[in-house]
Length: 112
Image (cartoon, rainbow, N blue to C red; front, side, top):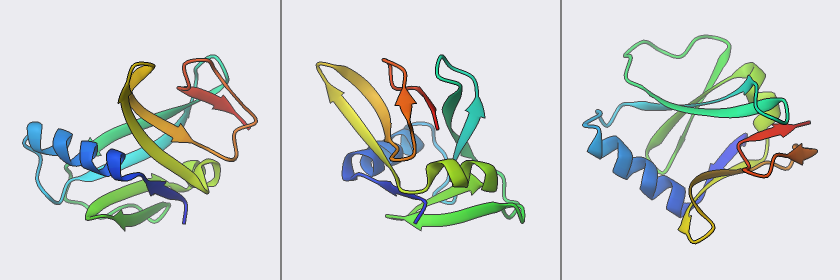
């Protein structure tokens, strides 16, 4: 599987989806884009469109959360776990990516 979600991440995604009044069929798009201090950055966004994912995208479902990942990002995200923390050292989503050879200190960008 390309990506997994911690229980905390799945719960937080559902909380955000509900607070933004998004439909239950709303997809979570996870991607990798160029940028950040290490070269690549993660991208998370909701997709309310009713169109089917394009042929070059993977759609998976984890804990009733539909996730769409484009094929380019899919290669970078293989084996990645998406977690959520709200502790003293920071609040937010964190990618635990075994493919990253280095990450920036804030954890929002990486290199392979």
